Image (cartoon, rainbow, N blue to C red; front, top):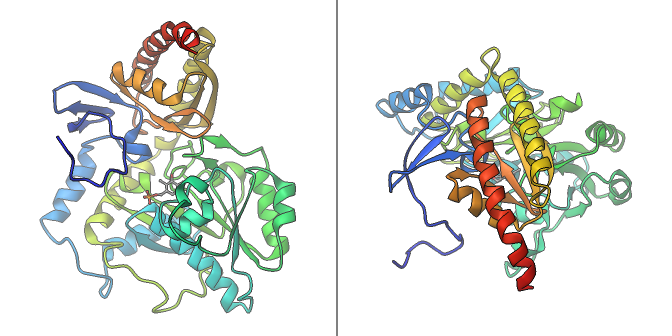
Length: 399
Ligand SMILES: *Cc1c(COP(=O)(O)O)cnc(C)c1O
């Protein structure tokens, strides 16, 4: 059948009808173990009773009012996010890219209102992903995503990820902020050298730059801390989150300190849908669970267990798996076979995974995943590796 959807995705021939916990049931009635989580979104798995109740309860009352009125659940969610983080203020969006767009605006506006309108330039990092809007594409600078879309938005530079010396050289009189993912997600679960974020914080303070973090993928407990910056013992000035905070409902947020957000006065930004009552009900329900005692410790422990089991798998299948990366339940397998083939082999074993840059396969299971489900995933990956090993000599012969 010819699809009427704009063909920007190469979709698998697979659709799902329902989900529960870490499991999805396809329209053909087959059960899949989901270690992709809809790209790090289904943080509490599928059909979590607390989330279903929050959404359906709100759906029967009120969906939308606009930001011309008070939204009490939004006030509450913002206050809770501030209490759990470095931030003083929150602005709700519908997606990660929108939160990043606002992060860029906040940073530029801060420099403007403090008398440095010339400091509009933002330094980012090669391999980054910040979304698909024109500004976030320019911020990441990935040529294949920019090609053919007209002049690249001005004011963005990139240096190699984790390269402090290159970064220092790139800072000039027009630099106003540094934008970074604490772990690159789409880029391939790329980790920063230890103490890099600390050095970045110092550099920002020294040059009066804002430190802007993109925690759209790493945030909301994914790495075994509520936010990945907490591993580094630093605080950013501005941060974008999304994905996990909505548990599958479209929700993002921009968090800022009072100082960094001081240019954002009445009329400087807006959104029709951002922070609407449905999203706020779900966001609060996600926080109820993620902030409950022991939840994030569970993520850290399960992540550690998963990475231990994956290290064994790598030892048994060195021709398929080259390296295990990640923190908490944000895990990357660098594969020696094309990562898309690995993803397909895992899918044939009814395990969902997600490809990323540097020929990495991402495992981003729901944060509620159990050790038994990790064991089940390892069994399936093990069978996928065995399948892939069989095809390796043939691949050699075909070349
Ligand atoms: C997914 C992602 C985005 C973009 O989020 P959208 O909701 O798709 O706009 C931005 N940054 C990071 C790190 C992401 O993983």
